[in-house]
Every structure is written in C-alpha cells, then in structure tokens.
View (cartoon, rainbow, N blue to C red):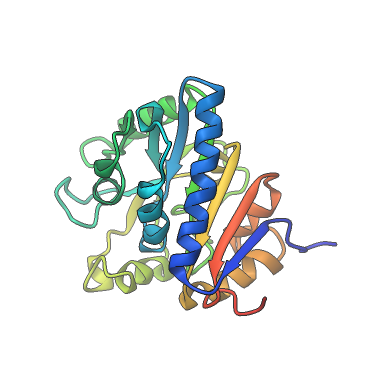
Length: 249
C-alpha cells in the first residue's frame, strides 16, 4: 500500500527507556560488526534528541571502541572551532571523549569548505558505512537536508546547504542559540543517499516537538516535502520513539 510504513518501530513510555533500548540494539550491532571484520564504521547525529541513547551507549559493555571509526553528519559552515554550538565538539563531549574510540573524523569547514567537502567525501568512501545513528528534525529533515534543499537522488555525498527557517528555529528551541538571528544560515551536511547507503540505520526520535514530523515520516508520500520519508526505502531501519512523539500504540 502506498505510504504504508516499512520502518520497524519501537515505542517506549519514556525517553530514558527509549534511549536504553536503542543503545542496547546499537551496541549489539557494533559487537556483531566488530566480530565479523577489523573495524566498524559509524556516522552519528549531533542533537539533544540523541542524548539519552548516547549516554546509554557509553555504558554498554563488551564494545571494543578501539576498532570504531566515527563520522558525524553535519556541521555549521562559519562558526569558529571554539563555538559551543559546533556539532563535532558536542559529540566529543557527549560520546567520543567518554570511550576509548579508535578514529574520529570531524568536519572542519571554517577554513576551506570546498577542501573539507572533498576530504570528508574521500574518507567516507574508503569503506562501507556499517551503522548510522540519526534523528529526524521538526521539519522532517535528515541531517541538514531540509525540505527546500533535500534531494533523494543527490549525486554528491557532502554539500553546503542553506538552513530553512523551521530548522533554524529548532536550533534555538534546542538551546543552542539565543535568537534565530544567531543561527548560521549555512552548513555542511551528508546527503540523504550517503546516509541511506549504510548497512543499518538506528533512528531515535523523542519528544512532542517531533510528533508531526514523525507522523509525516510514517504516513506521507515518500518525497522531499518530508525528507525523512526516505527512511522507508531502507531495508534495515529501526525507529525508536517515546510516547510523547508517537501517542498512538
């Protein structure tokens, strides 16, 4: 049936329960991948919606983090390296500095965005991506692929985009910036096809602010009006949410 969800959905009463369950599944996938090959390659989202999952993932045992190569999926274009709103440093504080991780590749677009795009594209292409840990924006974006600029058949892996007003407002509502005028208008992002080429996707979407985006992800026609609908084309995507994000059982 057109529009019917094909994503596996796991719904929990609370955000902490959701985070622990997602972390347990991600940890199991990591152990499986590490047992099968030398390294596991992962992409992480940087957002408050991922906090509970990442905190629980740090506490998971039996993961050889030394064999993990990590990437992140977006970064503001013009913020200085020391800006607290930068996504790479956020992931360092929340995850990378708390585990003995093997290799971390962070985007550093402030000096030369074109060179950053070229280098990051090359690093991503060195081997397949095993796991992506991602969320969904209030406007249905994946990474920074907002409805006005999302391309489900994007020919590139990394690009500069302009953030739409809803996305910029979310950055304020998430506590990163005091005013929408302070949010940088441009950013680098991994594209939707780049994310969907990963073997497994674990999508964590808590909170009432994500309710409409989650409903649209599951019910709307697949397309750029709600970029997250593209998740329904992936054969191995699990969506984790709390009751506030998906009130219906």
